[in-house]
Length: 119
Image 1: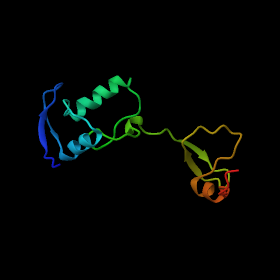
Image 2: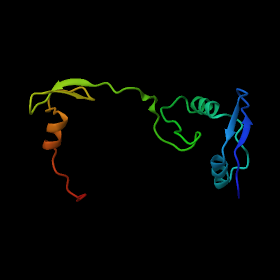
Image 3: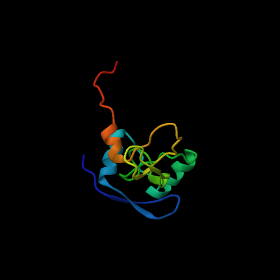
Image 4: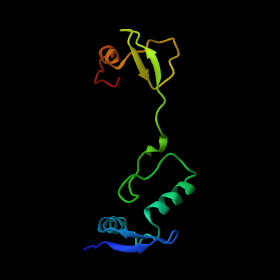
């Protein structure tokens, strides 16, 4: 079956959006009979309100697929002194003081070798 891009009108915001041939093929593979009635932005807003604003979100592909959202923001980093070499380092956790904290170089060299055995 051959698909061609279609221009549709969003039922929420009234803007025109393209229902691409790739999206149409996806709909056909999933057995969906109806065309989308909302643009990508309105679908995303509706999904977030339905999901209670969870941190999960669709990613790419016109609102298809799954994954983690990049809405999480920048990770808070904490400056520490490396327990091995004494250089300053940044880590994504608050050190408790009861365990050594290493810079990335020292961490790589002090990392214990992993065995392939699960038991």
